[in-house]
Image (cartoon, rainbow, N blue to C red; front, top):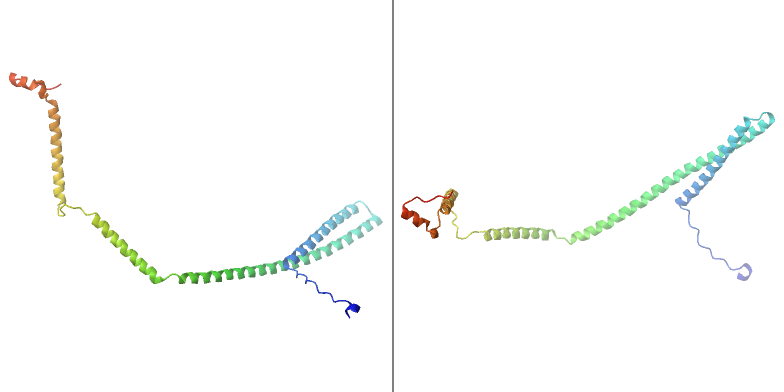
Amino acid sequence: MRRIFGKKKKAGPAAPKPSLDDAIAKSDGRITSLDEKIKKLNAEIRGYTQQLKRVKGAAARGIKQRAVQALKRKKMYEQQRDSLMNSNFNMEQTNFALETVKDTQTTVSAMKTAATTLAVEQKKISLDEIEDMQDDLADLMEESEEIQEMMGRSYGVAGDIDEDDLEAELAGLEEEWDAEEEADGASYLLPDAGTGEMDDVAAGGGAVPVAA
C-alpha cells in the first residue's frame, strides 16, 4: 500500500495565530495605501476642473465624465478607508484592554509574592522580644544617668552653703583685691630703699620727694 499511494507526509508545524498587533499593523498599511490613492485622485480631479475652465463642447463632456469617474473612485476609497479606521480603532481598544488585563495579572502576582514574603519575615520577629529589648534599653539609660550623676558629685564641699554668704564673701574679696592694687601703686611711687634717699630724708627731716 505504501508503494502504491506513497508514505503519508507528516503535518508541518502549525502556523502561528495572528496577533492583534499584526492585524493592526496590516490594517494601518492598507489605510496608508488608500490615503495615497485618494491623494492622487484629488490631484487628478483638480486637473480635470482646471481643463473644464478652458475647453467647451464635446471635449468638455469627456473631461467631465472622467472627472465624475475619478470622484466615484475617490468616494469608494474613502468609504473603505473609513471602514478600516473604525475596525482599527476597535482592535486598538481590544488590544489596550488585553494589555491592561495582563498588567493587572502581573501586579496581582507581584503583590501575592510580596505578601507571602512579608508574612515569612514577620514571623521572624517576636513582639515579646522587642518589648523586652525596649525595657532593657530603658533600664540601661536610667542606670547610665545614675552613673553620670554619681560621677559628677563634688567632694569636700558643704552642701548647705548659703548663696548670699558666697556673694558677700566674693564682694569682700573684690574689696581686698582693690586695696592690694592701690597699695602696690603707692609703693611704686616711693623711692627704692637701696638708693639711700630715705635715709637722707629722714636725717634732714625733709619731706619725701614726689616724682613729677
